[in-house]
Image (cartoon, rainbow, N blue to C red; front, side, top):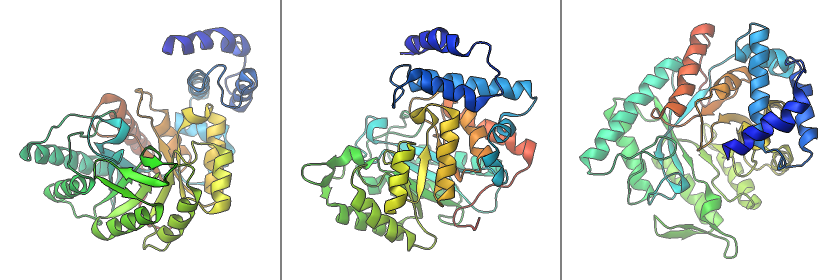
Length: 371
């Protein structure tokens, strides 16, 4: 729990770091990695170590009188190879799977405001769609309860019904599907996979699929819905399915983003395997999966070097800390996942990104545009 993490920070980590120069980020992170001494940071825990790593970064930024996103580039010169740009916002409006007590098999249905708009305009557009969806649910006498990440979590009666209602909400907000707004899914397929039978069981949809059948289902959805990306469309150890589908996704115009979260867990070893196999073309970056800021930046740079899209992400259990917003801008990340436009721990990141936009007057990214 939190008290255990705090005890580790105030105990062994404090003994290790008190008196060190906060401007030596990589050195401090390395001391904690070696002090913990385990591959998975199981001795002190990634939450304790990351909390200190991020606090050190904030202290150094204040010392140098730099905004946090500028400090990241000061501390990690490799990040300077990309211009500052505001990321795409992957806005989670429908919660399912383990994120909500509902019948929806997929974990998240997201909308992505696109087009020639500044970041704050995209947030406004997304907010209008979110509220339009809420009104639509009430009209259909569906609950407007919220899940872990601030998305709606009624009993949908099937994945396609949920997608259809999201499409209706987009149109009711006077937006054009594909031109103004695209859709993305976090399938979290490891939760649906039967390893012994090699089948994916979609219990809410009352259907079962082989990997090949599931891939065909996704491709059909790209014809029916303006799908921009699929996150974890297959189980984390179903490497063959990932390889096959990534090739198929690359043939789409524009290419479909195939994003690995459970597949990679922000782990350089698994990412290198994915790169060698051609599995996925994008990676979800979650700092507390790997444990320090330095290791997070190394994972980002490895992915970018090999042409993978980078999506900086929150967690389902989240705080109001906004560091990932600064990290997304500093690293030139393609997108950020930070939940819905409800719940303060999600909204805090959007507010921080709009503050950064004001400071930088930086353009926002687009899907399908050339870098």
